[in-house]
View 1: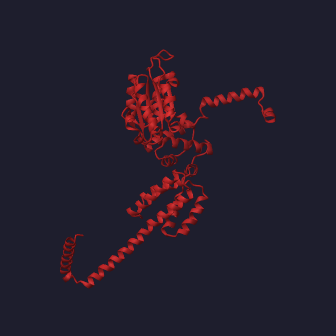
View 2: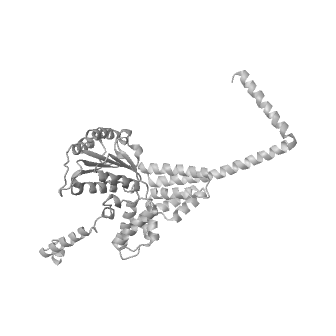
View 3: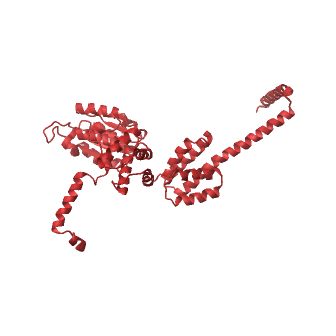
Length: 406
């Protein structure tokens, strides 16, 4: 080691020690992301998706698969499920029989013509290396298939038909509406539901036990709340906190807030209170100060959306106006807009929603005064006569308009 510090090179004895320690770490899997380390190895390990698991279990028994279409929110186990099923189906031939593509990166028609078509045309044997029988087909997994162009999807349709004897396709997407109908009609569709809070907590507790972590249930519940039903995001968050704090130190809720980048409620409350004053200068000063904290504007929109929905102070019309502005700001952020400008835009929208109350109150006062003046002009005894005369006047106006030809 001393020689390495001096020269920057390992000595003959150190080389062996370094390779040994590295191989031990690789074998233990401690260097691997926990998302991969604790990925389900069989379909029975898949969390919560009972209907999908049951159908795939029957397919594994029969040794045959239809073309599949998995859709649902991110982090619900779509990719893990098909990989686990393929691992059970092909065994030692798993890597040879699977082609996994991320369609968001390779989304054009050329990918279908080159990679997919050439792999689909390869023949597959019916025997494993261990002597067990193996289905004579391959599986092509297209992750994020909803990002593929329409031309690529149309080309894929023909390939699915021609190579059906030797290849099965599994399309994975978040939005099934973005897959063209000719493709969806050729696949068996499975919807992956967002995972329940209890299931995610149960999985996180299992990981904590395996990794010797100290985390109370309230901490895990905070991770689940922040992940929004995304198990992958929850596991990644837990690993990030462990890397920061270390395994021997208890994880706290404050650590979760800091790591995930959750905006404290104090900032959101201050934002709403300043907008309630309808002072645009104060709102601008607040945003200048808020930007120094380096919180993501998208996180502000996400948390504020929930706060607005469950607010008891705002009317339904105000909620609708603010929600519309939140959606507009989020769209512009995704389109590459400035975070600062969109926060200003959001505050202006909230202020206008609060100004709506003032306008309504003024209109109500005006209506009340008009009613009072009417009462003074027309006593109650004359109301019926006045109403009758107004009705007769309207009928005469209508007849006059008909004669004139309006």
